[in-house]
Image: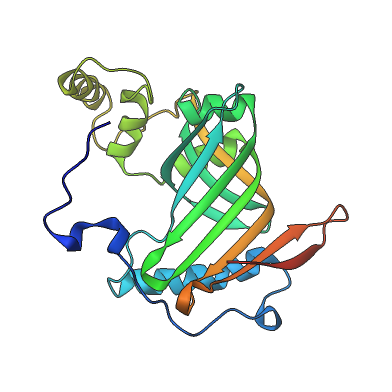
Length: 228
């Protein structure tokens, strides 16, 4: 193993990168009874930060899955709905995450709201949404995004960008703007029913607040504080 030259600019050294988070914390007494109500309040804060240009895509979340052999993979997707039943995102069921979830439905979600020093970490079980729900959402997507769901065999090797563009162009000719695009049979939603939901608030001196909701067998929720 050879010695590596240090970075010339110390500002680019990740070991030296530090940010002091705010003093305001997260207190158990101020939490909502249900984690999805707590999430709704935090999501509103994140969405307002996005409106002011300080946070990008508040509904972006990292989805982590494992295959049948336990090999993990992660990717960023957009959460498109949340309610008391969980969090919904849409994807190609033949993609890597779709195949993973068919083999192992346990999943982790991470909302990385770094500009406001917050994270939400969810663990739970992903189940496919019904076709009616999938169709209703698909109809709200821009025409180009509907074509893209057909053009891309997500997670498979493609020979070139030109091949992908050609597939899209063929679909664009077949289904011009204004003509209804059918919902791909291999495309649809997953709803993640949470088993734990952790709210992470950055604090000074790395003594962060971490409060985690845990679902009890009776369907009630208890809250526990985790060491940072």
